[in-house]
Image 1 (tube, rainbow, N blue to C red):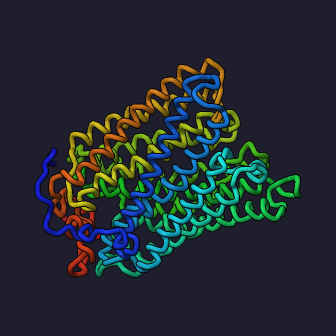
Image 2 (cartoon, rainbow, N blue to C red):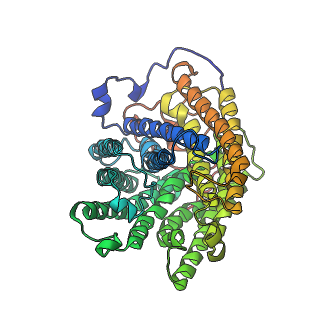
Length: 538
């Protein structure tokens, strides 16, 4: 891969040729809409990351240093809102999903192009409303637990409407993708010739359509309670605050898989290409995505083991929590089996994919400590939960997104990035991440509560280590984005298929032309037939 080559741009820049605000704002091109989502979500990733760094700086000292505890609660809430609702949930499904799904199934666009751009503008409207709510600083945390969120003077009602709009955008996007995958596949592209990224996006879309209305209704009820005084969640009005938790986590645990399933699909695409081997257990990986989507709806109660549920309910939720690990384990086993005796190339997409597997395994193996009733009592609401969550979400979803950005960057922009800078950034991210968050596992076991702005002095050394790690993580992330941004203008030209992949998106130009394919392709092969003659997997 070339380093720092600045040739003349390719003659055909496809959908990137036409410029101007209106050409993007009113576009019906799924690729442009995907890039709009990508730019918007990455902006809030960077802003949310700044808030995370401020929190880590504050936690270097046990007292009220740098800024007040009230400001800490506000920054903590802003970090959660931006990272969860404005970045990690829509980033891969709405951004990479929009860009890649039609290309990977041999279609010219999604099923409903006008609904697609409408979904983005609803998403943008939700962002504007959420930002407007910040005029009255929120300090509820991103979970907005009642009764505090029902009685605080912050603009929770306005925020609820913003989250409702963001959720509506997610529902419409999921519906669009389901119809697209069912109806617009190229001739010969049967279900068991589909790329595994498409399987993961299909399962993700089902969760978006079925789970997201629940959180929308929940925030509407919260708004109704605040505006009209109806007692849904406030016990002073005859409500039940646990009802809010049940509604919230019935949505929020399935949405964990909206975050992680697309990243799993990305890894499933990259591993066989850079190992030059057929994917091991194709059907197992495909069906496990659907199994995770289904079982994910049944385990929300493990967030509430200490909230007062019955012993019987706790045992059932604990069993289901362990059971959901089975289809996840199927994926991990098949990924490792794919690597076995492969001809592995350690380019940036592969390094991020291997990092995903390593970090996600740590996140997965620490999950049973929280899923078991006995240990959950001691670890609940400690930094052990923070570490587990970040190993799963950032070590999983965000690292998976980074893998996908490096893998499909040549396809999206027709340019190659500097491999040397990419590897340097990966190294900083890998070590910075583990220093930052593994320290939190130790803090949690020692009893450090999460969300606390102050703490006993005995925890300070680990907090200092965690904060120092966050600086390396931030430096690596900035270097990675700088490398990609710089390559938009100075990167070498990308070939249509620089990695030697076999999926359909690589059978068109880089970047793709406006309508993707001059002729709709006919699929005759399985997309993972590397290293030997392809065998049909019907």
